[in-house]
Image 1 (spheres, rainbow, N blue to C red):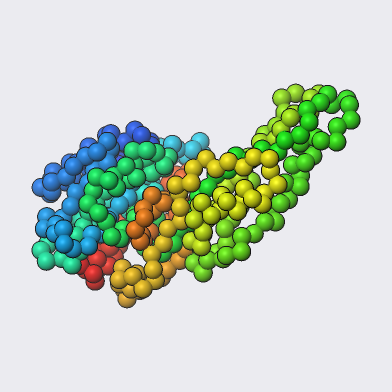
Image 2 (spheres, helix red, strand yellow):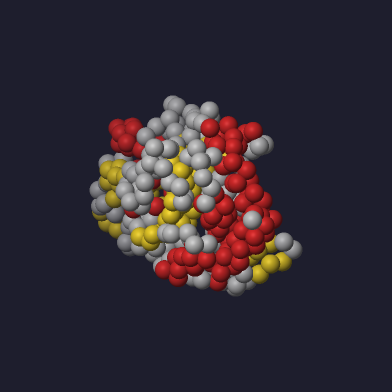
Length: 353
């Protein structure tokens, strides 16, 4: 059965690549996923463009594992030399938009769920959610499903990790900062030019360090990513606007970071756009992590954000492919990565199910 599932998974991945599914526009790829479940006679439900199902012998008295990955994609960048919607296999590489992020993970998890669907007497229940709007952190993605699906106790989130276990993931805060000064004509003296004042603010953000450093995720990382001021050459503006990207480790909540920066940062205003994308992790002694270690996996901390950010339960990021290929030109995943990914997912879950 595994070989058949592997074959069908590659065919599904090719179909997903052919079908445009930018965030919030995943209707057609949702239909392709519905076709898979119909083919295998697995009952499913659909909420917006999220497809979800539970294993046949779901038992409310047992803990539940969520299997999740997404079928939306970013838009292709201008550096593509291949058609992003044409699934081409060359030298073992399957090219196409979303092949690596996160189509390979998604079809591998769907195949894995299908493998276990009819099995009785499992130690855990399984819930699968093929979700939309991950790339945009939109309102109708996995976050919207948590009140609809059964309560989950632990999650495997499918993102490209080379099938190694990301046992922690940094959270994200984006701040809008304002440095204020005195507007004036450029011809007159002005000792309160906000552009000049910005130099010291930038140096502060460059040098500031949070005290707590995570064993898995390292330090909190602050990066000024945008700066904007002024409308014309002969006028000093009244303010300078900055955007600050903060990647939060598992030693702090986003609320903690907001409080610290608003107290310490030398800005007149520092406003977070959202505080919901917290860091996430799973204990090293969790049964899933132990099972992964027993079959030869390694652990690491991930700097990139995923749908783990909307989960409050322990979660493990794991999937075929390489994060460095995500959002790249001529995105690809090795066919063998998907085939092996299905085997490894099944092997991992067999240790706990």
